[in-house]
Length: 194
Image: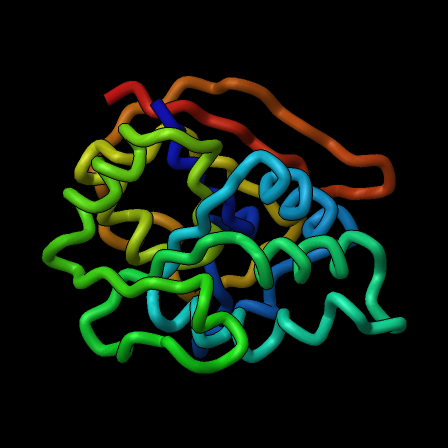
């Protein structure tokens, strides 16, 4: 069975974004892209909500060939450009055109749990979710998330969107703690137990 693995950045005080939905308020550093590239190497499907899809699609495609981007950023871009993408949305039209049109399909919210359950039971590698915290909170509440990897930024933002906004009931078991040289942002890797 495939694993659904969520990877998200959060502030030390538990926020997914800063005030006014500003994700750039979080204390990112060089390891963020390096770890995301590592996670993408283990996956063959990305799942995201509409807002994350639109944000990622507007940013990532040209980074693959950008001489100004670092190696980890270019690798993340290459994965975004080629991996299968599933967008859970009731408002996004079927994206048959555009830079990711041929690698993207849209699933309605009411069909998401069943679709993800079927996806997990099929062949393949990990299914990854980055950002999309409303979506993964819902999937967590439905018992469909297998692992949660939280990159804990060594800083506080004081206000914003809580990482567990919907307060799903879930149990976790610590699988590991990762650190990267020169980074103050540890990665807490949890498996779900309920």
